[in-house]
Amino acid sequence: MEAIERALEAEAECAEILNQVASVRGAISGLTAELIEDHLREHVLEATEDAARAKGAAELMNVVRTYLK
Image (cartoon, rainbow, N blue to C red; front, side, top):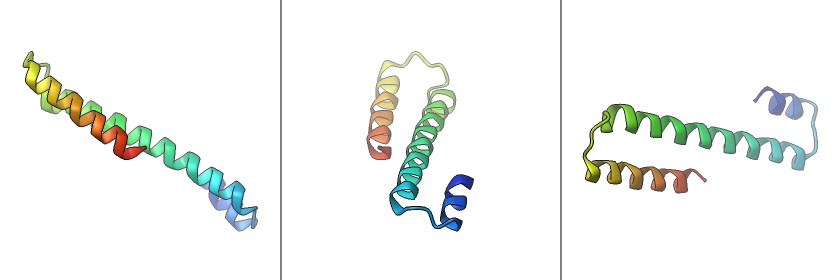
């Protein structure tokens, strides 16, 4: 984020700034997906052996990952 701010202040080329923004967006999306997945595993599934619950959580994570791309 600081690099983007510096690039903006330095009036860098638009393409350079857009590439940096796209990189940050991808990184944030990946982090968000990981945090949601960890939350599902720790607080929703709670290490249960319920196969239907685990399948539902996996399906939800697939939807979230698709949405965040």
